Each structure stands twice: as structure tokens, then as C-alpha cells.
Image (cartoon, rainbow, N blue to C red; front, side, top):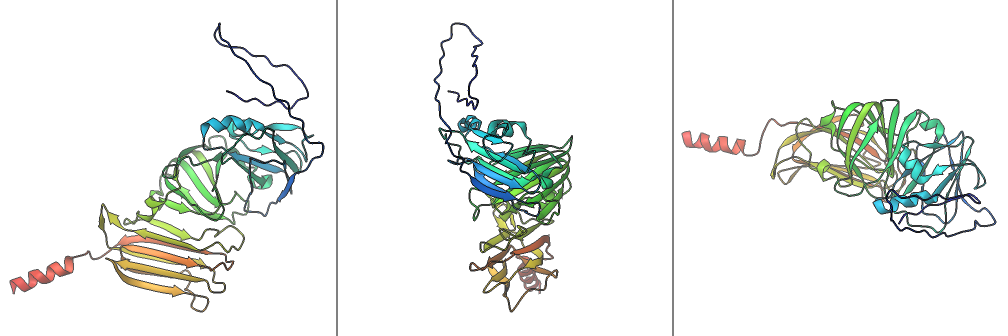
Amino acid sequence: MNIIFFIANGGRIQLATRESNVIFGFAVNWTKLPRNFASFNDNVTISQSQPVVYWAFSTYPIQIRAETKVSLVITPPVEDELMQYLRSIIIYDGPDWNSTSLGTGLQLFAGKRQYVSSGSYMTVQQLAPAFPLGRTMLVFQDYENTKDIVEYQGATCARVENCGQFLMDGSIGMAAVTTVNERSDSGAECVNSMSGSGDLDVYIGGKTKSKSNLIASYQIGDDSNKLPQEFLGYVRTYVLTGNNAKVNTSRSCESFYNSGVVGRKGFFASRFYKSGVNSGMQSVYESIKSFTGLSKNRVNFSFTIKEADFVGNTTMEVTVYDNGKESYRQLFTATNQPNLNSQIEKLGDDFSVNYKTYNYETKGFYLEFEILKSSSRYGIFGLFIIVFMYLF
């Protein structure tokens, strides 16, 4: 069964089939708009690094006001059978439902383009009856930050262990993909691999002119040693400058935690680091282990704490384990802060950071790491002693 919505006062419907001797029918439901316009109201600004995000399933229209113009992209539902219900989402170029329609949610998603208001207002309404829309999200930004983007998509993760890949076509201009977690205080996204050509920037939040929330940049094809990489935050935006890209993601980051091979580079960051606002939800535990099959490898963990914010009782514990034994442990606090930008190297097979804010609002932390070859391996020294004693 297909659901079609009409917002005109009247009109004609023409139905046809590809084959003869086919019986079909239709039912018409008529719903009157409320007499008074009542909406959820919000604002987007140029300086905002975090988009305004709403669930598309809404009993009231959503009115957004921008400094310049309003930009909108939509993330689709996970379930394919719910996709047709995106037709019930009507986007208006103005402050209410009397404004010109820009199109439907389904047209917006299928077109791989952002909708942009002609003025400072945009209104989005789900028509009654309100059909389920799953995890469909509406992502609003000020157009000043997104006006360079030609192809713009919203993406949804269907399976935690493998979200699949999103394809980005930058052949005629900048391309972008925005993803949104189910909740703002939990969940992660892991970029496992990428292919194609060009440069890929990753923003915590939306793309900004200032790039204040840019957390990582990759040269596709040349930076494979920096993947997999975990990204936290509530919203992430991937921006491609180049020809094309295929980016493989998952919501399970086991591949990141167990990727401690020699030559590996990456970073740990708290959930809302680079978000532009202090948050009490910055606590996070991050780790990376060095394995070959089921065997642990001794490597040299080289790391540099680039930024760490200590408010109140906030702590940051950095630990390295070597064959099950603690070889390095340092607890940083407001009174014992780390030397930023100082490189530390420690031998081991398990490297972790535990950042706890105890609900104090902080900027978070950012730590870069590189895995170097160890000058020793488990068992070599012991074997040398045994052979030496036997010979003499």
C-alpha cells in the first residue's frame, strides 16, 4: 500500500496501471489543519557549531529562524517500509504553513541536496495522521556555513556492527554527509575505512566556516594508518573536497579498540570535545590494544595530551599494561595537570585513558597517539638466560 499526501484545496488524481485486467482501488482521508498556528520555535546562527536537531515525528510544526537563511537535511528511517512516510513531511519556505512549499521529506532525501529558505524562516510540518517515521531526524543549520556544499545527505546506521558505506560525489563541488546518534549522551561512530580520492574533513556537529569544531582531516588513500577511528558527539558531518569517496562506518568500535598495530596513528577525545560548549557529559573510557590473532604484542605507545580541561574534581587517568601488569599509570587532576604537547613513550600491549568529570562541565580532552615498534618482545630475555646458563 502506498500513501500519498496532498496539501492543495482541490485537484485531480489520475491513476493508471502498466498491465490490463488489474483491479485496484484507493481510499481518501481528509484532515483539516488546526485553526491556529502553534509551533516549536528555534534559532540557528552562523557561530553555532552544533546543528539544531528535531525528531521528524511531531504533533506540532517546527519553525526555525536563521541569521541568514535556514539549511535543512534529513536522516532517513532505518526501516525501508517507513521511507514512503517521509512524504508526510512538508517543508515550507517561511514562518508558517501558508508559505510556499519547498517539497517533502522524501524529495529532500532522494535529491541529496539541502533545502534552503529564501528568507530567514523555514517551517516543517508532519501531516496528519502522523505515520511512524522511525529515527528520522531533521538537521537545521545557518546556510552561511553550508552554502559551499553541493551534494548533501543525511545517513542512518541500519546495523550497529556494520552501518554500510555512504557514497559521496564531489565531482561538481563539495559533498557532505551528516549522521546523528539516537541519544545525545551516548553512542559512537567508527570510521573503519575509506576509498576514493580527495580530502575528507570530520566535524563534531555541522560544517562551520571557522572550522572551530573540525576534529580530523584525512587524505583519502594516504591515511589508512589512521583508521579505524572512533568519533563521539551527537552529530557528525563528513565533508569531501575532491572527486568521490566511499566511507565505511559502524556503531560498534571494537575494530578501533583492537587496532594497535605498529605504525598506527589516532586519537582519543571526550564526547563533546570541539562541540563549542562545555558539557557535564564528557566522561569517557578509551583504550587500544595490540594483538596479532589471539596473541598480545609488546609495542611502544607514544602519546601526547594536546588539551585537557580540569574543573572541580575532574580526573584523567592514563594507564599502560604490559603482559597484564601495570607498567605506567598517571592520575591527572586540577592540581596535578599534564604537560600539554609533551610526548610520552611507554612499552606495553594495552593503553587506556579514563576521563571522569563527575558532572562538572568541561571542554573535555584530546590526546593523540602513535604505535611504534618495540625493541623487545615477550620471552626473548628469558630465553637468552636459559641458553647462556646451559652453555657455561
